[in-house]
Length: 547
Image (cartoon, rainbow, N blue to C red):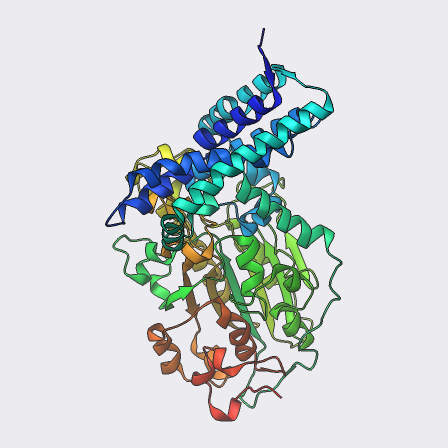
């Protein structure tokens, strides 16, 4: 039988539990930050957990009322347990972008994070303390006495917070200024704040009026064109540039496309670190600095502007969808339950997109309009990297055939990730091969990943870190081009200039919008020439401009 506890004691114990258990990731960040300081005041360090316990006690008291205390904190414990595991094991920060990514995760993807480690964590840090809270008998006093005790409890804790803040103000200010990421690991305040912001933006605010862009768009070119142009854009998933041979990686991860003489654009920076943000951002008119997901959904993307210009568009998806980018053009999400040796009811290997492309290319051409086909692959999506490639592409061994990747060795994790890059390279080569075999279009191919991935560097795994301190592993992505001479000539471009793009600097996802307009010779008022990476390669007679 559980002992009867007062409301204030239960509140204090909850605050102590949250600080000492759920905030272990926060203290890890604090430890790393202190290691970089030349002088550390041990008394200041000792005040940090005391400060948090007192602050949490005061905040938690606001929810410690009869009929609210148990259901509220049981739910908070269960949610915090999952957030704690992601932060502790993978270094994940639940900012607004990650909350959005979580909301948009499908069930098959969510199940990949289910493993013995996550289940054990949920049992020990979630269900067990939640059950203890449910069982404990709480001694509620008459409302007048309870309120007086609560006010005294809150006042005492705020006094502790105030004294610590007053005495160590300079220490806290200096530490947080040099370690801005630390506050993002405080559980539960940061993830609750992020969730509240996401819910407010997406569900509570009045919908923005939809805004069309580039309705004046039209194709203008003086270059000779005997066939309609076809660009297949392969949107990669979770591929980081540093594991590509094209960017100096020592392993042979790109043997299949080697024969096609691809151009690799250097040091390309992504628009975000998670698909839910990066994918719509890279196709939007807004750049990374100005990007707002709510506004992006309420205005045309580059796909829509090309559609206004009469470009024939289609989007085929083997990942988590186009995040609204393709909603107003032909689009299809691959059915994971279809009869195919490449599908298992949870995921499909990316070969299904190659087969879909071949099927589309076999269809008769109904008009001479230029064409853009987007293939959104599942690529290197983790943590179940081993499910992304067939056994025959398991070149690097031993690999990591499990979802709790933090328990694999460094070698195993790199091997399994590199196998996904190898298989993606095969898929890209198959796309190019299909384009070479058809005769109806003047073809080209572009491959660009949405964001990168951490594989244990600096204690981080997966992706989704806030961009302000995201490592290069999550933000530097591959951008590959295959542009044969007929396509280059049809666009009035110089072949030697296309080759020289591999030495161009300062390229980001922000360049995609205008570069696609330039490639399709689309003239529109929303075109910005300085962001078109192909602008300098275009002959003046075939120039594209805003008007």
